[in-house]
Length: 396
Ligand SMILES: [Zn+2]
Image (tube, rainbow, N blue to C red; front, top):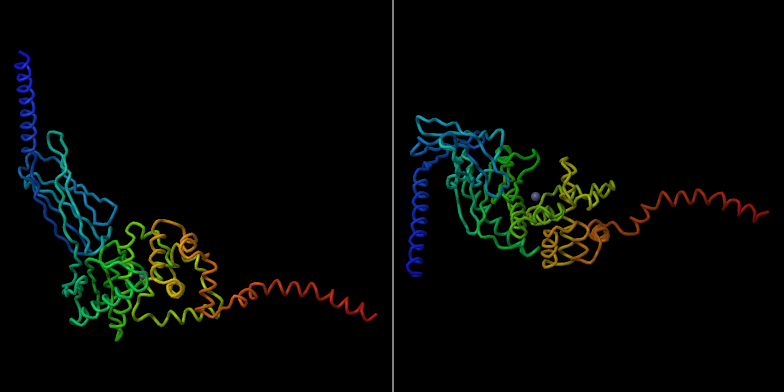
């Protein structure tokens, strides 16, 4: 009897599970299927379209989208055309810029006539800068893309990337990347409109975009520009590979310093800016370059020059393993003063004085005297009457 009852329960529970699964399957069946498509003109707009089959049950549709490596989720209410069974949304790229060559993930949120809501599967596309027709050349792990000039532009970039990687590994044991895409724009205006950055920046995209962007095309200086910019941007990329989310915690002087030291043909302007600042006693304290760089072009150049010189000094003095550790320690979020203290066992101020003595010829004593000179003068002024008085007293 007990055996029969147990069997009976099995049958009841089994039937309930079967009923639940078939009703779920029926509900699933009824959900309209999404057939998406995307078209875009880079710099202008992205048009998301989705067709539903069957379209009868659909009441409203919105699109949700996000570039890879971005925390911000964007969304838009779509225009629903019930007759066509189609929804459309246009994203205006002039109002909200999205990074070039980034993969955009998108999906749809659907409201049905019977009051249910559901999300479709996720889809994706790469937002290419289709204002230009790009050519491609590979030399793993690097691939170069360009739209103006011959293959020598790409060759120069691929060579500069390889030499830059070797140099970065020599300076701070940078990691070997799996794959790096380098986009070479023909001029600064094209690059700037692609990235939406400050006018004086020749090549600066967040390495979080996952690609390198450079602009060349200054008259006659193309090769030099490539050998300067590609290793510089590659260094930022490698630092990001090493640190991930900790990249944002790196002091600006170290991040830009390692990138600038990695340049294979550095700007002569750096040493000119340094000499002038030393002569005019206008060096920027390294501590002021921890959080960011000044925006004004002339001062920014000095900030780059100082960061490069200071970083070069540290790497010559302590070597590549210590520099690698310094990057790791800062990526953990320790502050600017603590990082150097922990890795080198010296204060930022002492290291700065040592660097100035070594690289800029500013001696400790000269610096101390020049800082003290107003006080020495005051002491002399105060002591002079006393001395005169003493001499007069001795005479009498
Ligand atoms: Zn940089």
